Amino acid sequence: MERLTALDTTFLQVEDDVSHMHLGSVGLFEGPAPPQDAVVRAVEAKLHLAPRYRQRVRFVPLGAGRPVWVDDPGFRAEDHLRRAALPAPGGDAELHRLVGRVMSRQLDRTRPLWQLWIVEGLADGSWAMISKLHHAMVDGVAANSLVTLLMDPRADTPAGDPVPWTPEPDPAGVELVAGALAERASRPAHRVRAAAGGLRQPRRWVRYGAGAIRGLAAYTGAVPPPPSSSLNGRIGRHRRWDRARTTLADVREIRAAFGGTVNDVLLTAVAQGFRELLQARGEATDRPVRALIPVSVRRPSDPAAHNRVSAIFADLPVGVADPVQRLRTVTAQLRHLKQLGEPVAGEMLTALEGFTPEILLAAAARMATRTPQRSVNTVVTNVPGPQAPLHLAGRRMLESYPYVPIAGHVRIGVAIYSYDGGLGFGITADDDAVPDLEVLRAGIEHGVADLLAAARGQRGPAPPAARAAARDR
Image 1 (spheres, one colour):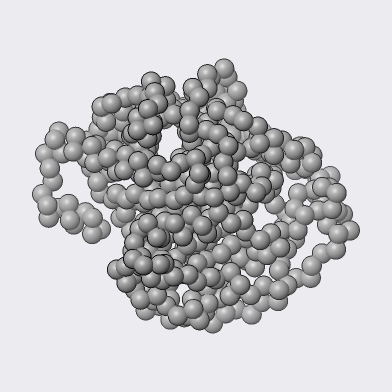
Image 2 (cartoon, helix red, strand yellow):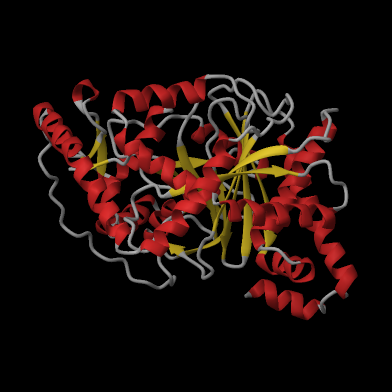
């Protein structure tokens, strides 16, 4: 048995009928779609590389400890591989509607917490794959790793044979309780060993502690919340999804002209999207939109199937009309937040959860998502992906777009994913509260286009052949 971390457990505890805590992605592949048995074979041949795909969650009786991952004795890959066909004409609207419906359903907790949907009927003859993994299994970075494990770097990679697998016996309730109590008793000793390790590297831990103290001050300081906005409020169980796209080459051209990072450019484009959305709704833009931005604190030695994520809170400057000035505002703010040590503070707060009784953790997690709040307006996450093409059952994935869950009183979330030279924005919203999601999507596209035009106006446009070569890379 492997016990869920405190953060993994929290993603289960905050989930309810309206807050669904699964991550996902939408990949577009060259056609035609492979037969279902070919997809099953391709996935089964890789399952030994990702044991979590065959494991389900078992909760400890009486809340005596965090849940554990156990082998699912009835596991069958085909139960998690679904198939659907788009209605005519098979365009973006039909695909986006299907993604919203698939993501509106909770995953079955009696089974391993993942699904793959093969979608046929796209107008251009291509097909799509919708992936769906619970946040308790992975963070965004690890979710990318798990999904890419199922694919091949070459179209002609021969299909392997499944590795024989026998599930471990399902533990009894008494065994779960005993294991939880033993694990709880070992926590103080573990913390002492960690502290002793810190004493052997005093300079590193002094820097770490100073960053954490500055970050905790930023977390808990008297930062005024943004004003009331239609971006916050009750959400329902149904989701709406849309997507936008640009290229790494264009974003790097913007960065080369004005400085900052790729992430700064992308956040600036998202700010433009929210600016246009609020303007279209007749709402003020004189105060920023506050975004929770997950930050990976994953180390090379960390297990792939665990959440290792912290966060910073950034104010998107929707009131700044000039795109270049907006980018410079974002760049300066993100540099300042990182210097404050906010990601380190978030990691420290997560570690402190190890001292908290599980029942109290669950109560706190539920209260956080059910209590009305407006301290955060949205979530924006950026996950780097592979820059070489991937294939499933011999078909090349052409584009990939992410899905981020929304919960509590946050009605819109934006995820960004880079793959094979492209950058895909996946935008999740509450279906009832955000009927105008296409305004946000168009605004993000305008944000990139405006920055690119400014960059080329400042430096002169690159030759068409050079731009085409950059996109091909």
